[in-house]
Image: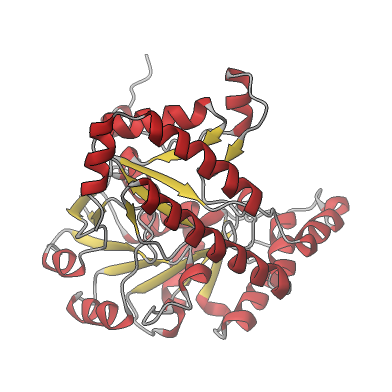
Length: 377
């Protein structure tokens, strides 16, 4: 019998939002809308689609391991040097490479309870220790994180905006935190939702900092609608990037993904439209949730976290939405057992979602609704 390592036996794998095809197989529904995975409801940029199609005849070739053309494009777009960039198959894969490159068994990754599940899974499957501190009012508690850095801490993970809460910390808060972090401790600043938050007052752009112990990660999955292509990038000092190239798989991202990402960066109108529709529907959802008496966490991303009175109520809410063709995301695996995350859709999808949610909230017991209302802050 093959021996399975104990850390693999105990590992809880990442569980994605329910696919539309799975719900369609399970239930006879006239319409299904998925607002569970923070995807861009408009799909990829038309320029990205065309660029990917044009690559089809070249896919018998291995890709450039250094993603030269894409790295050049990102460097020009962000105003940074090419030797500060490495590309990978999404931020999830880059987090794994960072842990591979800068930790060993016995080391510790420090983060918050109630953040992106990918950091938990990537850490545990490599048999590294993960230490968490509670969120403070659904925000990263940077002071608590700083005070919990210990001798074994090698990496601190931050997400700004945070997933699944949508909350942000300011430039001054981040700078104060970095002053308290020892130079030998690496800080990951995950900016997967950067485009949605960049206009917020005081929001820091991670690429403007020059800390030698900082790695910033970004993705094309959200704002540019390339989630299925699996493409992201990390930015750090050339010394750190050189080490990451040693551990990353050589032939990723794929050639179609790279070309789609390059074309996306030129489609300014698509990005502008994405952000405008998101802001409109985020406000629309927030206003309706307030009217319905469901507690929500104010968001600076493309989703809203709803917090129900209990885990059981959250799961009843989730199942009620599924029954009516709306896929949302329970976030117990992220560390918020009573939380439901829902992202914005198109105008029509958002209208459908709000109709479903109104019916589901109405179907909950009076006590549940009263309890939810008392949680509003």
